[in-house]
Length: 542
Image (cartoon, rainbow, N blue to C red; front, side):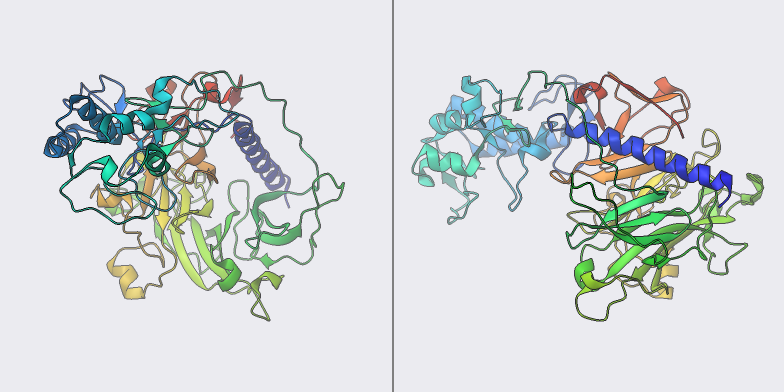
């Protein structure tokens, strides 16, 4: 291994460590909710006041059309009591609340009513005990004997027979406030929010205590770029090097003083003959199928050199579809445009029994080429892959292709896959004719709920756009609708205390930061360093 390649590997590992430590610091602060709508989009800025649900300025999950639809629904209910009408309006307008995804969240059922604060705060919660925190009781007392047509409270969430879609009172369905609030009530704690009228209640408005720090225990030493836990839940992990090898290792018990156990001479899979490895390229990501324990399927993301490998034959990302001519790009560090490519391949564990967890090696032959695309330059090609915890789809992080300032605006071009996060279905197998007819970049399918269904200008693979080089992304294990992603920048400092520069997105669209103050967001969720109690400035070392 050359000194340049070794230095690059260590730099990438150090960059990964910086991101990991930063995300660990998030864990030391309370898990606060972030703005997100029920359709998994970010709230949009209001130009004025909604005629029905109000909201002067700020952001909302409703536009004029949605606001008008809620007004029509409310008027059709024909609520005769003024006080109850006000309560029903606030419940309906919760759909417009910037935190509506949290308010209507349910692990098993679709809610027709947001979580209503019922005053049952946890022992650790510092929320106030004013009347608004018992909003569920207020709703019951105000509306229990009022007739409501097509009431949103008609069906209890926990079973029970439905009523005809005519008129009903709360007392027609529930015998008491306790029964009613069992179905619709909830407390605001460190993991959830609830509606206390026109606003959302959080667990605490008091400053969180200063973190006492994080303890790191050294268990090994090596230039590993990726680590993935074994899907069987054991204390084993998969480690991979940028050069192209994957190992199965055993992690010692915390505090035991033990070291990482792995056999460097016997990798789980060796792809070093396929992987092009140098300062910018190599094996960039590994991901295990959600059903790996039964099907043994896993996936590897790496780079190849078309001048060295006959299997490196993907389409160039600079092509006529996006009005890009490769001959106009010129060489980059001596490489021709699209000489280097991003590849995602499928492999399988080698098993001699039905128990996949017993596998200690993989079949070296590629099962399927999921994705291949030529890169315009020699930097910013992402490469991380992971599976969504709830949808089971593969997420592929792709950089803008490199070169200063994204001169061809690949990141913002909706027909280019550069500067994007892609969402792919890898459970279906496509024929060669299907791949050609659909203009796919490999053997995958398009999830039917990808954003292209709402924006016909988008390539169907795209889930998020406007990124420079997304690196080390992750879903929140407790709230999987939250997606954290660190992005590489070009200015000196990318994450600043008291400034919203760290972007996590469900479907984001950001303008390239050639000038730091030019950040523009049309559909993104932001997390401020001050929200995390981090008195820090992180400097870019990429």
